[in-house]
Image (cartoon, rainbow over all chains, first blue to last red; front, top):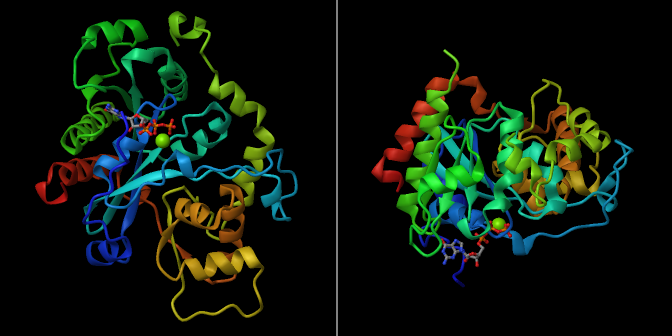
Length: 205
Length: 130
Ligand SMILES: Nc1nc2c(ncn2[C@@H]2O[C@H](COP(=O)(O)OP(=O)(O)OP(=O)(O)O)[C@@H](O)[C@H]2O)c(=O)[nH]1
Ligand SMILES: [Mg+2]
């Protein structure tokens, strides 16, 4: 159960960036959502060129409403370390993967993370399927971000068929459901391709 | 939304809760306005304008952001590294941009969506990026 979030050995932070990404490069993102501890950080870390922060680095300051825009409200607002990784698509385009915080008290970050996203992946754990309901509901209600549900195969066993999971989630046929192993870069990349294909398929003409 | 998902005890209506926080979000959205009305997404790249120095002393947070942006950074990276809330980072970046100290790079929306998605798909299929 206990393996560290993978940081590829060839990740060299700024060095990689300087070598591969043009100064005028664009950035885009895919959001990875799902319940607490479902494997979001693991998924992002499997394919990222940069180290992923991970939830253990999350911290909060005193929370409360921010009502003075001109004062620095740092002492009154919540700070959350955002969880993200990067894939260089080509020298002119960096794809970021943002994990949503799994804990409900950080829900306020969702709109911020999702805004402008190309697509989203909702990660689900079959042992706790209901944990992904809020994420499915969120993207269904938004309606502006193409998404799919990826079932994280925690033990590599397909104990639940995709159809059973789809039924349990009451997932409409229009939303793809795929199986994924968050620890396997190959599997994660296939899932990323699947959601981008879905975004292409659902693009208004 | 399906009934099954609606009826679960674990269901949390994120959208309704987000609406209740309209005050915070309004601040986030209006505070981060830049001269060019560019949106500062979490993945937006920003960088210090080469060779430009502040005419007057910056506040500690703005100074730290300006120094950190000597290399190109994303908005999220700045918030993480400097332990500042996202909304604060947006406000300060907007100020720095109005002072001509930083560049806010265009986001990928400048590329037609289909073209962008096809490009991402190609990049994800390219064995060199595995
Ligand atoms: N056996 C197994 N363990 C996994 C798998 N994916 C994740 N884990 C473990 O499950 C735990 C949670 O994984 P994370 O990637 O941190 O999950 P998360 O969704 O980012 O969690 P939060 O951000 O806290 O909501 C960690 O201990 C991981 O090592 C998997 O596919 N198989
Ligand atoms: Mg995490």
